[in-house]
Amino acid sequence: QVQLVESGGGLVQAGGSLRLSCAASGRTFSTYIMGWFRQAPGKEREFVATISRSGDKQTYTDSVKGRFTISRDNTKNTVDLQMNSLKPDDTAVYYCAARRLGAEYGDWGQGTQVTVSS
Image 1 (cartoon, rainbow, N blue to C red):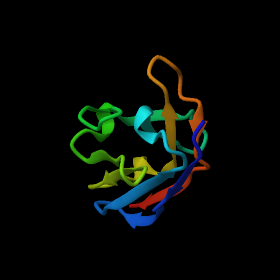
Image 2: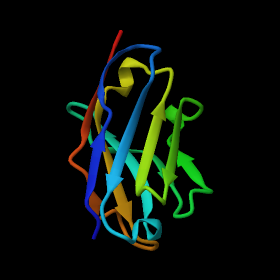
Image 3: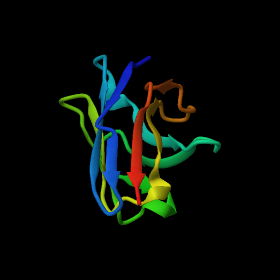
Image 4: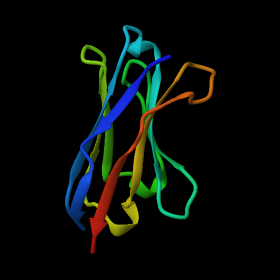
């Protein structure tokens, strides 16, 4: 099990940028596949991006491709989400999550609010 704490959310105008960070506890961070998810008001939680254990492979949902970048630092136990060209539709609570290879996401952070004004 790993404990996750997100930070970096806030209010930004459309077209602006934010960088979210997720700090993980424990000494086994590099054994987890990490992901970012988001949940907008009245909607279900949706996948945003994921990064492999070594950081060499990233996957994104179509709506954020070319605008968001996920990265990780296994020496610092952190995973970041750089969000550029933000749109009002990106407004949501963003969650960091971790899973083992072959398993579902089972460890979640408390979330951080991102609000994009038009």
